[in-house]
Image (cartoon, rainbow, N blue to C red; front, side, top):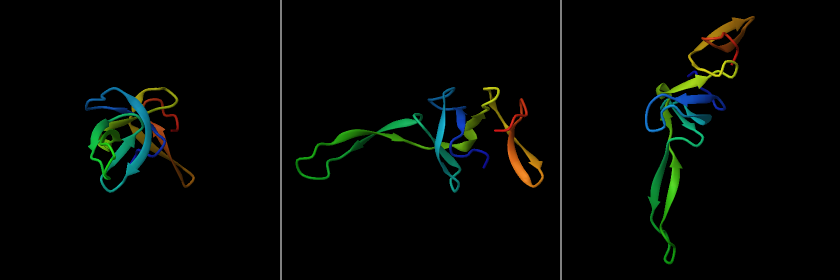
Length: 101
């Protein structure tokens, strides 16, 4: 998977299309990533004890990695990722400006 925790990504589809944010969590089994402050849904929570009130909680739901694109820190554009191997070290590079990510 080319997206890692801490990457700045742009959302390609959905209700938050065009917005960008930082990746907080990546789930490798389901190929999903949670982006900070985006894809927020409201969940109604029932009271668990007597006398406690029910409430509406905001939940961050993960997005499919296929709907995310990494934003290059050098050029500031949403780009695909390539790899460069230099003496047994593999680094991610921007496909548009060839700067390391």
